[in-house]
Length: 238
Image (cartoon, rainbow, N blue to C red):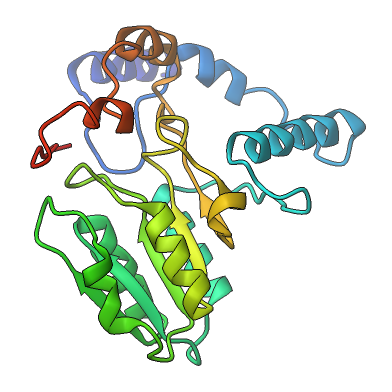
């Protein structure tokens, strides 16, 4: 019976491709690793590994010396959710840059937790300007949520301008840097950012593709350096 079941399973795997959201096809190498005992986290080796990960994240984000890293086993949206519900309460009033689907996702998360917020609605593909921020100065807001790079439209926001506004108005600054981290300039120190979070860009099931992607995309990054050479009205659809 076992032999028949295994054969049927092999046929199923060959004839079906998993396009479902969430679970993905996992490489055989990763599947074999998954069969090993889970590494115990109360060991010196595990602690050393996590401390190294934290040190590297802080270095690449130009974070203050006393900053700490939190590692989540979840998606980018899970990070947006975790940060919003743990940093803010119903007593806060937030400003959210809503220039695309991920900015609006921040708004949806605020609605779920009943956190008062105002969406700064932008035309699709347009950057945030100081004129957009001016009406909200001195209006009693306590926090600012922004997707540094609005992935759905390809717009990279001016974080120095945003951070200056937050400093002047005493706002807690939370930055989603998922599609900007390691491609564009990220500096928690310069911005005075309270929270910055990122995510992996080679997801579970794509480990074998990572090295290929790094090499293939090396000369094709769309970053601020490239955009500075483009026409002022240039738009990027991501």
